[in-house]
Image 1 (cartoon, rainbow, N blue to C red):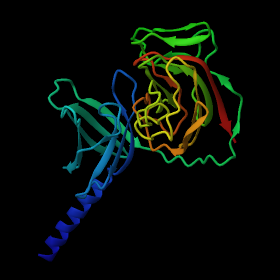
Image 2 (image 1 turned 60 degrees about the vertical axis):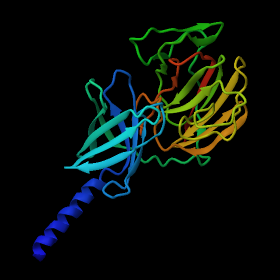
Image 3 (image 1 turned 90 degrees about the horizontal axis):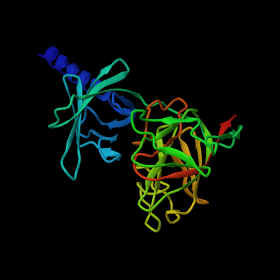
Image 4 (image 1 turned 90 degrees about the vertical axis):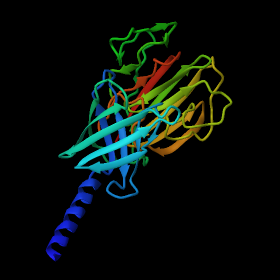
Length: 309
């Protein structure tokens, strides 16, 4: 009897141990028409207190996971959209060090979206004063779209340069820089219209929001925010129609943003992707993205200075 009880206890403990292998942060690449990256954090899997967050099942948000369980070695987590009760169901299994899974919206006849996840890398570079500016790069030459390409080549490319200003005509594709960067400072001068909504993607993964929200309280979806993740200290927006500036510094996972001369994000730690992500490869250099699919935005200056030791 003792031998049987010991065997059963060992089996249960082994099961919990396997369940706990799902815990942690995961960078996820889904197989979709639009290049995209997702992000998952799981805690307490294998216990009654399992919890997690996800970027992004809906609304571009950091979504709370509503249900998490493991059965027969397969992880299932479910996200329910509050305003309409839409249910997004994710299944995954560990294959070596990777997660391999699917996602399907409950009730949908579409084929499940396949995806692969890898553990988010530890990036321990510190913004400690040892990083020096390299040679500045003008990503916008004031003449044409050289150095940029469409995120979605099959969509109509309605970006143009007029009077040394880069502008879109939505709906159109986001555009992506040909060059990739790791640690850098960036100076960006932009202008929007009333009700505009755009953003700048850093390394193709982390969005600094651009929004017509002059005079409103700061929030995680407002101008100057690390989108859906970190609220800016103040809303430094100018009224629509005026030229505005972002001065951005990114070293490792440490982010600083000065918005129209005011520091709005001060040594913020980036935990992981935001919904703008066109790639999930957090450990390597990535491009800039200018969001153009939502509404109008204009750019007259986009200078990037790599930071080197």
